[in-house]
Length: 169
Image (cartoon, rainbow, N blue to C red; front, side):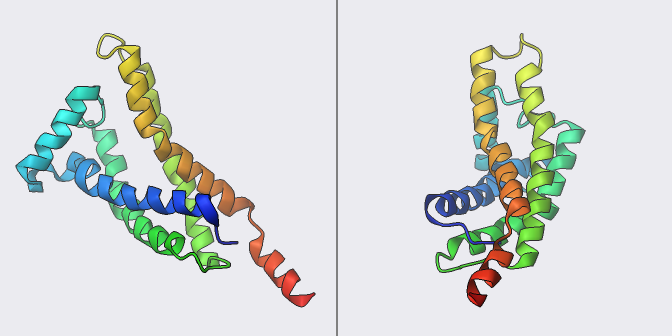
């Protein structure tokens, strides 16, 4: 897979770096809350109350907790690899194994975001006004767009073949 360049590479690098922070501070509280310091618990509780985020509000739904468990086991390790790969501005290509795990990560993550976004938009209208639901939707949207975009880039890239062809000319 050809290495990402310029603003796109930087955008992916920042996305994954920030995703590590938000996963560790916010998301994992859905399954590990008792082990978090009170000030971080309060931070997430205030955020959830402020924007009426249905996923970060207690009690946490079991289906949401199962998604967060997979975020911990599968996605969080990938974030560190992605930060490393996208942080290297001198790469010409990424290894084939990174291309493959990027397809798996991107398609899995984009798929898990569909029910999350659906709950945000189509939940009981008396719980939160449309404006607040739209704000929460926009907060979650990059977590769909970036993985789906990365899956598309990785699945459609034929960079290894093009690099080999250009070297033989």
